[in-house]
Length: 510
Ligand SMILES: [Zn+2]
Image (cartoon, rainbow, N blue to C red; front, top):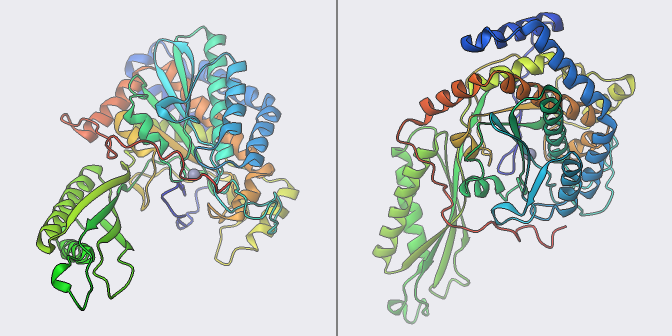
């Protein structure tokens, strides 16, 4: 899954040529796997008739309502609202959910554009994530050449208008299926704002919103179709601030204490530390403030630090050592030091139990098949990329299932995966080769290719949810897998402490 988030950059994984797809074979093997997932459920579960009917229900419902959701997605694409400012987008999504009988709570976890929509009662409780924020400065029309709509305005370059809408569509389909089949079960749609740098999900996990959820399903726009389990890097971002005493640097240096000395001593110690940390760790810093004039001893200096590692617990260990280095540096230079944690998110914990299920459903749904017009659009947009890209026909394929996937970046979904078993997929909303956070991604997401892929994501999530409602033992299996990963002593503690959500971080940029 070439999937991307606010803290990330796009990854061009090497394209792997999968075997020729045979939908029927996959369909049958999917059914066989679902039947084999739970021995206890097997006796009451007749895969062939029941599961076929459920999959058909999802496909026909989502095809029938496709024009409605396409309109919702296009509206949100047009609003292109930045993080924590997504009021119209939230209104649009909650409007659909409210009219479908969901109970809506807005402003959760102290964020006005975060919401929770709930339907049903009893277990299993299935959570679905929805994002909807845009990116600054990426205004672009839905055509295959660069055409800004409004100079300097935001654009949906990460496809979150599709993300939010497909997730709502999946939640509504699950609700309709519960009603039709008179089943117990709860659907919780989490409206998670400001993914691009605001990390709203971390605040939602910290506030316990996921405590009563059994599994979480999500997806992300991508340039291929892939439901393999993946992990990523945990990250902690901190500002270190040193306070010294100003003095004339030539006339009275003895009267001064340089805040920059403190900061440099800290950086020096951290750079020595690099030799004695795990191989996969990453430490980055910049000096954001280092004094105002060379002839004045600086009384203030500041550095922004990021620590990353594939395991959140290792990030915490390294971060504690960095804080000690900063304290030592302050002591040695006669300065004072304070730090402020800006953000932090855990790595993704892959869950194979759920990922397998999701993959089998993605196989049933398939990839994105282009019409001749879409193929022409795809070729034209690929001609604007100056690197090697996979053939556009590959959008119709599903990438082979593989374990051990890893992308060297971070996402705020991570925290959720440590408290609830979670699975996600990527769907080819963008023409193969098109990177996230590009004008080409805005263009694809605003036209039929993005919309068709969105419907595929909704179908895959809905089918996976139904599998779980039909076989609640999947929940215990998925929970056991998570428990084995985190270990018996793990207790979730957010990396951000008691920090308030940065609600104003995009204000004035819309
Ligand atoms: Zn994104």
